[in-house]
Length: 480
Image 1 (tube, rainbow, N blue to C red):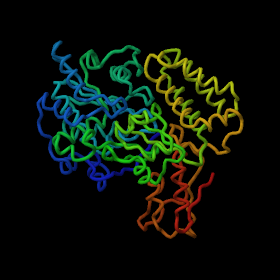
Image 2 (cartoon, rainbow, N blue to C red):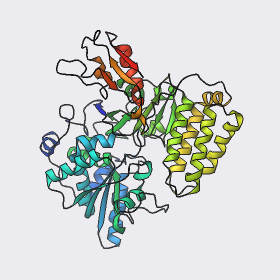
Image 3 (cartoon, rainbow, N blue to C red):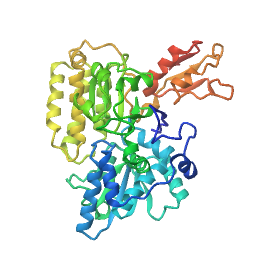
Image 4 (cartoon, one colour):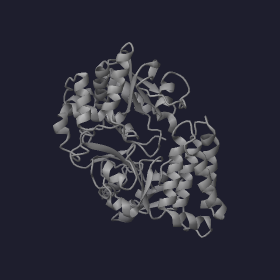
């Protein structure tokens, strides 16, 4: 599934700077917007990352300075050779923030990667990506700066498990892009058996921003305890840069949404928040910890009022089961069984189906070769805790009567048979539709929609419905 996200920001953009006027920053544009990168010694860079408490933005949130120093220690204990890997895979369809940066501002990520590579003395810098357009963007940027002797791009299969550390290393080395099942730290043994610094796209971009601003300048945004900005993917379609500590409710409102029935934070290995919790929580580690959630990979997925929670959750669980690495029983057999039990709950399977979900979750937890079984089980457990009455009613046969609109993005979402249609006899060229639905609507030179009939991905149906309701001329409709 190829999705081009809409971009926005709260306050002054940093990572997304310049993209309000330019669709992509080439080398010249990049230097005009961001300026040159200062030089940092190894310990200076580690101290900068530590001072701003820079953490990985791909899921686990591990302190970057600790990773950096761990690779340095491993290198000193061996022959000094190291490698560096940038995880640009984002195998989850609800996450687009890293793809947005790699497509639109690739030089910022390369800056951060080269800063870190210089600190650890890396002789090999590799981007692991899954999309052809991202690969091309990076190859163009590498050629623009003449960095081809050090920086290279590896194209890997687009799967959920591709982003797992050992899976990515295996894939880059030409092996199967699957987790090794071994508890090996890449800082000890990674690419080519060398100590390897592996972090995700946004992490390196934030490092490049901090290197230019310095710790004091970087701390002018965000919270005293959690400085800086972070990138979010909202509703699987909009990438926002916001200061840490921003209200989740404000972010949703800015995207024309609301907490609805609840909000999934952190993606499909994340946690569901009740609508009330979503209205009160801030986008910070401390605030999210009060509701036992983490920002993870930055996905924010509201569940609209007009969709069926049981059906949406079962749909994602089935996709997660299909994404199994196939290397252990809990993943290969346990996750499909869990998905089947959830489907039985959604279709009125009775008390037996309800009990089967709990049994299947227990059967896969803490037994997998990688974190995929645990993450999927936690997603389901969080849904049961957040929507207990809804799911129980479905299991017992009463249900909610709502259809599944597919608001939780999956790779087959672009196969929707629905279309957004413009009635030319009514359209007055107000342009509100493109503001609400930039992923679908494009305007011609006269300010009218460029097409009368536009394919409508299922994941964007809630936004399209808002565009239909808010069209001043009532010129839009959704049809099969």
